[in-house]
Image (cartoon, rainbow, N blue to C red; front, side, top):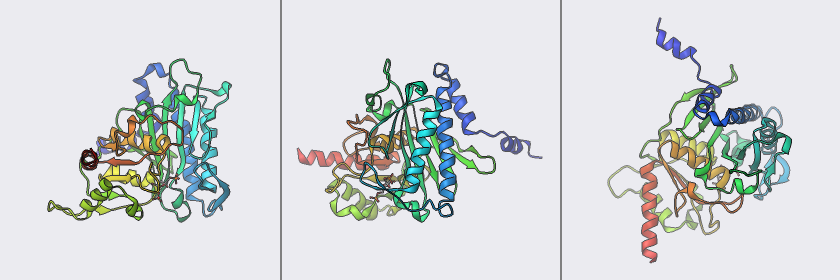
Length: 342
Ligand SMILES: O=P(O)(O)OC[C@H]1O[C@](O)(COP(=O)(O)O)[C@@H](O)[C@@H]1O
């Protein structure tokens, strides 16, 4: 009998146990973050089951409204948004909420208010919802500033101020990747237990990758550094093999692959959208936080993504994130372009 394997098989590290262990290192937080995260996890489990049975439950298709981004809302967008808002409110630990689907911040009523602010994209990858391709939920968590009762100023802060971030991918398996500032860990939902179990401890992104991920359909509008980077990836001049292009069109799925396999994911600025497409608070920041925790880096074309000080809650930014060396390459191309301008 292989006792070690048995011990490992029976000693389940659930996400709750993991967060409780993390939280024990911060007694001042009184378990509040654990309670908040357990409500986010509940929301992910609900959305996972809704996504899995979307076709059966007539949850495919449009809801009939348009969100602040000008996007037609999908039924699952609206359902996921409601689930997370209610779960966060009922946690009693949330104060200011920012959702991709809501034009204004949501201020939790005083009786249920807590010390955390949550920014989230309830269902990312909308263009892939109806065809069953991997989609996900993205979230970032800030603590209220000292003495604040909870205002939008508590979330218009650099991403490096976040205390935790994560995403949950609804794909062939349901995987939640989380960081509370001490590394990034992946948990897979065991449907038979209804529990997220630690399956990817202490994720370390490969220092250099063989994959680049970008919507090449926008290539004609790219700036020079992005064009040069993709050109080099396809036609390397140093005798190395060309990189492979992988693009799912769901940021959660593209970043998840990048975290595990290495490489670079980018949504650059272009002539049509000079600030890129992806939103700083609930897409760029959480993903950049996780990538940095896994040993990679995240760049905007001008600087470190987590140093951005957002001016509004739906602000967009170009993003280049992934393996340390790959992002270094694109940073070098941007600084060379800067030198040329001078
Ligand atoms: O279709 P495009 O322009 O390549 O954009 C794809 C990107 O847009 C997104 O779908 C934006 O997110 P939403 O679906 O939440 O609006 C990202 O997941 C993805 O990386």
